[in-house]
Image (tube, rainbow over all chains, first blue to last red; front, side):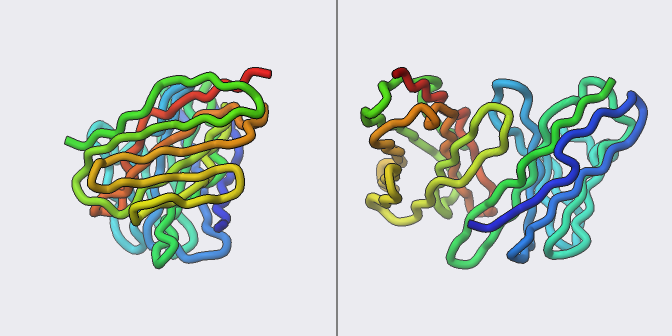
Length: 116
Length: 109
């Protein structure tokens, strides 16, 4: 199957700092990427849909000024958590839509963010 | 509204067979997906059904009935490593995945 990478795998930061998470599709071009967050023992929650070259579409309740998403190329999307607080501590997962006949979302390995 | 239902938890015995059901109501349909997620890890893709019928892939099979809004994931010859959450998701007309809450599968020796 297709490969999606995420960097970093885990990050610990101080409250008030910003953290950038990268999501890359390694062997296919993804016009659409998705960002999810997942709290322990809970299901995935879609945060935003990111389309290459355009502004991201955020789900209700997700602050666009706090979670900045950039999808500059067909293989890279970034999520920046600005002015992070302890309640932002979570598992952030991206997925990339392969499109075509496969029409499948492949997930990155996730980034575990801990804000102290 | 859009809704995906699957059991919260199931228990099965090593070597046995288990069927995890999923029913859905969504706006538009571009396929149904099953993912496996081990604790602390991201989901991994298992199967994709867009036409009615059974898709077999090794020990795992997935079935879809679009008219009934129903799918199941069948796991055969269960192994301890199959203990995980199994997520059912439907891709809607906007190509977004609508997720079920997941079924936690516990395998006992």
